[in-house]
Image (tube, rainbow, N blue to C red):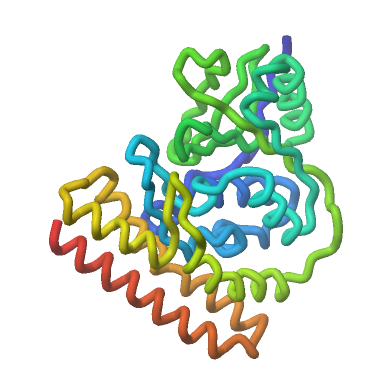
Length: 272
């Protein structure tokens, strides 16, 4: 049956330093196994737009921790992987459960190449990495603890898994252009049209405040935490400015947004 575990598959996310978005962590750890050490957590927090975009779950039965969780799918992944210049394959929940044995074999193939597979539980905002196997059992690294767990792919735990396989280089990328694109996308993200599931940017703050006024406190502490997380957008903005000095005017404005997030987080922390 065989057994294999990727060596040095990654360390846990540093939550104390605001590395809170699991999808960004999963992308970074996967790409770093391929050899792209420059594609770190903060790089992906900018490329995905997660660090710039407050999100509010309008569906109170489903929690979205970031933009990537709320709009996860082919369009969003196309944008990410086109920016970084790599091929990828998205396997939807339906595709996975129609051909489970086929995709478990493919997961093993990727692990044998020392490349983790990104696994999303589509029932919530949870991401993890498939980093090993023991027979037909696929081993999970959840990026929050060092102990590996076993995926339950038979749906008995009410999970619904989708897979992301990272492939080969599709085209050369320019790091300065990637950071420039991330920064220039922010105005559109802050005014992104709401869906039945979630609202974004300015509207997310309005919906969040309205929900508190009517006594809806689901996920309230989490939303306060994300303002603290997004206050760290200055890390991405600093990198973008070093590579693109001509972006100073828009970066300066976005730095003010970073400071506002920090003030809101501090206020909420003192109020709790």
